[in-house]
Amino acid sequence: MAISSPILRLCRPANALTAAADVAAGWCIAGAADWRTLALLAPASMLLYAGGIAFNDVCDAKIDAVERPERPIPSGAISRQAAAALSIGLLLLGVALAIAASMMSEASRHAGPIAAALVVAIVLYDVVLKRHALTGPIGMGACRGLNLMLGVSASAVALGVWWPVAALHVLHIAGVTAMARREAVDKPRRRGVALALAATTLTIFGWVAAGFLTIGVDPILLFMFLVCFGFLTLPAYIAAWRTPQQTNVRAAVIAGVLGLIALDAAIAAGFAGAVYGLVTLALLPLSVWLGRRFAVT
Picture 1: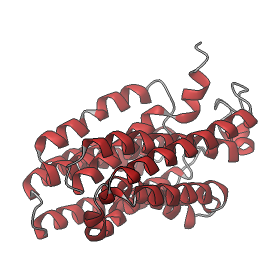
Picture 2 (picture 1 turned 135 degrees about the vertical axis):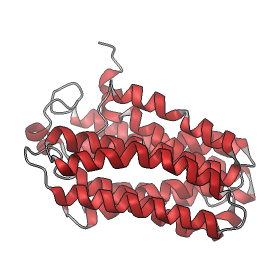
Picture 3 (picture 1 turned 60 degrees about the vertical axis):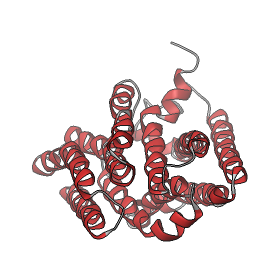
């Protein structure tokens, strides 16, 4: 097994691609104008996600030793100290890239502060918020909302106008997180699955409304890609609700996480055109392929 395998397992590369898709969608909201900004913010987002997920496993080492002993830290593939050092390094590097983007032009001056706020949100979630049934999903959703805004920060003007749409990313991921809270137990509850189903449905309707009510957004393209997002997520949720077994709930969680790429593609298509949507959506097959080789949940 390659030396890097424990690190890749710790950082969950399939999930990191969904973070890059968030930034791509936000960059399209910002006008898809400066490719240099995207070239810095997309890897910054992936580093921040990888650092956050590694830090999550550092904080959960004792719990994972019981519920998920196959994970890198409890299995002994990497030490807790090494994982902590890796997570800190990734977070710092991600912030550094975002600061570089903010220094590149006045338009993207908010990128560094948003990345720093995202690190604070990640640490708060991993250390405190996820321990509670209400604050955990909201905290994880807030991380995704900030990640979307990291992409929007390519334009200070767009950020000032479009920051409220971050609430839709918060909503979707909060629902998925609520469903995932009992994914590792033998008898998951329907309540978490129902919350995810409701949250994702509301997210779809929210973006449909935004598309038809906002000048400058192509509502037809947005809707077409949203259909893809719904097809990738809602059937898995319904199957998990009908038969709330661990396998079904885990599959629904994976659909909710990786399906976020399709939501980001819908946003990209609605704001910047079909080509941008398709390029963003092209991350999905790679994310699915990586998800079959490295854990997603």
